[in-house]
Amino acid sequence: MSKSSQPQTVPPSSRSQADLRPEERPEEPEEEVRCYHFPSIAIECERKLLAEQDVEDFRGLLCHVSWSLSGLASLLELTGEETPIDSALLYLLKQEIKRTDKLAFHIQDAYSLVELVEA
Image (cartoon, rainbow, N blue to C red):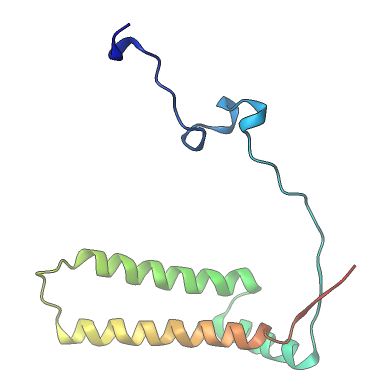
């Protein structure tokens, strides 16, 4: 049998779940319910942060960080090694990085006192 007529094996990671044999499928994580204790200062910080960012919950905060980082990455991808960066553009990039860093810090600060409650 020639090389071209031999069946090709595809690594399990590149096949869909339906194509995998049961023993090749990754183990499904169990669902769980988690409970957290929010001290009053954490609640106050969270409410302030959510209002400032005009979002309803923690997911909204993470979306803001993610969108900002994605936008920055896209802008940087457009500039090649040989592309000169205008000082105004560089200033705007720095400001956006600072803004995103500040938001990430405030998220971390707001949730730093939150503790998982054991069931």
